[in-house]
Image 1 (spheres, rainbow, N blue to C red):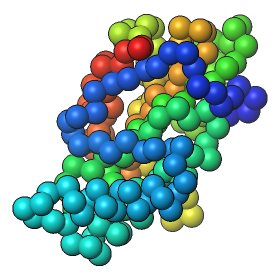
Image 2 (image 1 turned 45 degrees about the vertical axis):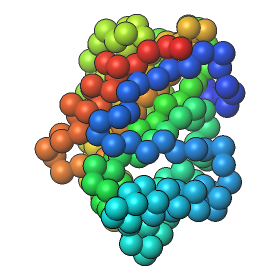
Image 3 (image 1 turned 180 degrees about the vertical axis):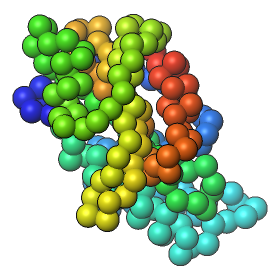
Image 4 (image 1 turned 180 degrees about the horizontal axis):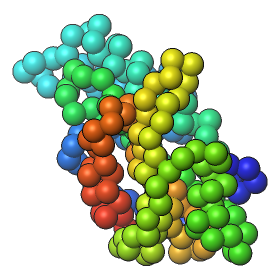
Length: 192
């Protein structure tokens, strides 16, 4: 996104229920190696009756901390979480909420066009608890290995007029398997 971002902590918050499926919040304010150690310890100690293998805990913590490090560098990120439906499984999806400050004359549709650049996407209008929003679904290939990626994002106005971008993305298989989850999370968004 060119020119619209700023990093700051707003006077309001936006939340959604991340209890099911199992989401793991990423603490983007903690130094990466410390965050990795905290995650690894939490994974090993999560179930005293069936502790996670140390090697699996280390690898999983590295993956989760890698996502935190990647998202930490994105301007405007407020919150992020990763989805791991199985205790010893990999990260299957990433959820992030970011904030942008375009001029008041910029519409949500113009924001999405600028934010996504040349990406191909489907755009629909939605009514969410946080107000009118644009739902953006996109699928394509990413990276050197041309990994199939799918995402559902929502753009809506914050109480102060800024634009909130709430997005969930995952390795796509063409099945749209996490679209319903992304939509349910968006329907649960509230300002605090």
